Structures are given as C-alpha cells and as structure tokens.
Length: 94
Length: 479
Image (cartoon, rainbow over all chains, first blue to last red; front, side):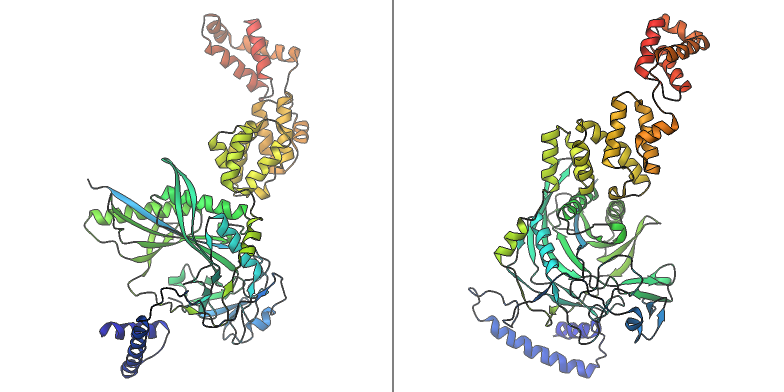
C-alpha cells in the first residue's frame, strides 16, 4: 500500500522527524495494524451514540479575565540563543 | 464567448477585546515594547499550562449569536501543529472538529437586492507572535526578529460558506461582519492594527457550472480596499488562464499592495499536514443553555435593526441609513447629533459628506474625530440663524476639523459672519453693477443667467460672506 507509506513519510516530514527507510517500514506496519483495529471497530453500530469529544469525563475550568504581571523582558529573553532589540532573533525563514 | 462565475469564501480572524490573553493572564494591550507582555504560557515554555479565559468564551458566544449561529453544547480545543518562528510551542491551540458555533448567516445588500451569506463555523483560537524581517521581505531577509506580545491573544475565526459571487459581495460581507463585531463590542476590528484580518478562497467556473473551479487562497490583504482589489485581480488572472487553455493551480498567493498583483506564496500540492489532535492540557468545554440565554440578553441593537429604525424614525433614505449604521461609532455620533438638532437628513448629509471625507483623507477614525456632535450641531444652528452662509459653513467645518475649535469662536475670530446689512450689501451690489454693465444689459435683455454671474461677483467680493438670498433680492429690485 504505497499510499499509507507516503502518508507516514509525509507525517514524518511535517513533524520534522528524520526517519530512515527501514524505520519507515516499521512505522507503516504499525499504522497498518492500527488501521486494521479501526476497521474492526467500524463494524460496530454507533447510530445512537453521541460522538466522543474527549475520552476523559473531566470538564474545562476557567480563569477570570484579569491581568497579571508576566515575565520581565530580560527574564523572557534570558535563554534565547540570539537577541536583538529586545526580540528573539531567528535564522532565515525561507 | 464563454462567461465565468466567481466563487468566494472568506476566513476572517478577529481579535477579541478582552483584558487578558486567552490562556494566560498577560495583557492584550496593543503597542507595548516587544516581549514585555509575555509569560511562560505564551512563550511556550515547557511545563506551562493553559487556563481558558471565561470572557473569551462569552465573547465568542455573543459574536456567534449575532451571526445567527448554533452554539455547541460541548466543544473542544485541538492542537494545530506546524513549525514557524512566531509559534513558540510549535502548535497553535485552535478548534478543529468541535467548534463552539456553526451554521449561521448574515445578510448583505447587492445590486440585485438582499442576499443571505452562510457562515460555516466560528471557532476560538490563539494568535501567534509577530515577526519583523531584517530585509525588504521574508524572502530577502537574512534573519527575523520575534515579538511574542501578541502570542496567545484571543481570536475568533469566522468562516463563510462559498456563497459570495463577486469581489463587491465579499466587500459587503466583510463590511457587515465588521459592523456586527463592533456593535456587539467583542472586537475593535482595526485592520491597520491587525485586530481584523481576512483571507479569501477564490475560484472561477463557467457560468451555470455545478462544479467549482480550482481555488487559490489569498493572504495579506490589510484593508477593505486591498481585499477588493486583490479579489478583482485574481478573478481576471484566473479567467485569463482558463481562456488560454491553462490550468489554475491550487496554491496560496499573497497580495502585493505596491505592485497591485497577487504572487505565489506556496503550492498546496504538499498537503498541509497539521496533524490536529485534541489538546490534552484542556478539557472539553461545556456550555449550558442558561449561559447562552444570559449572553443573548447582552446583545445590543445590531446594524440591520438600527438601519431599519433610522429609516422609520427619521425618514432617512435607505442609502443614508446604511452608511451611518455601517460603523458603530458613526451611528453613535449620529444619535448624539439628532438628540440635539431636529433635522435628521441635514445631519446625515454632513456626516456622509464633509465629515467622512475629511476623516478618510486624514485617515482618522470617527472615535478620534476632532469635531464633536455638539460642535457640529452648533455649526448647523449658526447656519440656520443666518449668522453664516452655507459655503462659509463648509470652511468653518474644515477649520473645526483641523483645530478642534468650536464654530462660534472660529466665526468670531476670522470675521466670517454673514453680511445681512441691506445698506452695506446695497453698496456692493451697486459697485458690481457699475463694473459689469454688459451683464446688466444681458439680464435686462432677458438672459436670466446673467443674474447668477452678478450674484457670484458679490459673493466673490465679500469672500462668501454675503447673504445670498438678500443679494438676489437687491439685484431684482435694482434691475
């Protein structure tokens, strides 16, 4: 199944992962196993089941809309490898 | 010749007007020194956990209700994963599969009448940081600088259905959407400050076709005008390609304001692998009906209703009512004026004519208008009382705009009071008649137009201060 192989490869690239051809074969086999399980699940009737939003039963908690002092600029930039004009300097993007 | 039809859908991002960010307590204030509104959460430091700002949800519900959307009883935040220097966590917290609201619409006015434009969904997400490229543009920059003040500022993304059929309709949609977000006070909607941003999906297809053409995604349109121009350009470009028998490519293009063209940013062929998955740091958000009902009671009169009311209460033409209600602040200004002065149409003329003209040429928002409602009304009263003439009123208005001074002071200081003294005007009229015997002859010979010229000469001599009606009467008597 070339398409799964391609999809796994593309996922690796978009996640910035350096994966060798051999490793890729292993992942493709694992993904195929997972898809197999999904196919089995597909046989179950879910007609009267609400879609699962989250597997945990916990609910969201809120904070009120109030402002707190954050980090000073110096602390924010302390670990940056390169700083210019109070900003993080990053290498050429494209 | 084959005719084509345009299909447009808009994705609008609006920054919400909360005090603090969506997942941390840093201020959302615009314009601070770089990296001074930051904390471990919005800098994406390991171990920092997001906590949802309740006000963000309230504003999202409010905007969604004003856009006739269904509010989901349960929704969820997902991680949208990609690598870019303005995104410190390497993912954006957004809502993919379960957005807070969906299935709305808004009405727009088109040359063919009112049209309903569907809204596919509205969801909440966090903003990214701001990049400054060291060079003319990103492609030529050697490096870039990142400011995370904007990182994690709350946004709603509002996605329209592909119901728009022309750049003009897209503009009308964005105009109305902006007005609704302003009226509900959930966003400042300042395009120049980036608190309202718009991307467009656009394709063309042979007229009558059921199947949409290949679309391009347009970015970087920083004003309403830029949106319309970019779309107009893109329609022409795509139709041009099809007519030459070429294909439109599925790609993201950026609007180049200087050149007035769209340019390729990236090809869409490499599928965008955002690898969405539920954010394990945030639990599902449950919204009960009571909350929705409570928010519903806070929704003020919306632009469309206000427009109806102005037409009904003040007998304003639809066009006037539309212009005035297109901006919340302008409508508010209008309301203040009609409360003080009993000629709604006259006020609308001044707002739509002089005030908007001066605001637009000087790039000033109505909130920052140097002319107050009180001062405008005072000016109109001076005109009514015959203290100044109509043409002088316009000059005074410009002076008021420039200096912020009240009209009475300007009229006094500059000696602009209308001359209504019969003796004084009579002398000027006599002088003009002496200097222009030919025109006097012409009028007496039946040329009505000569009178206009003579009156004009008096106005010129008095630098617009003569009472035109009185001058007319004097001429008629003497001729």
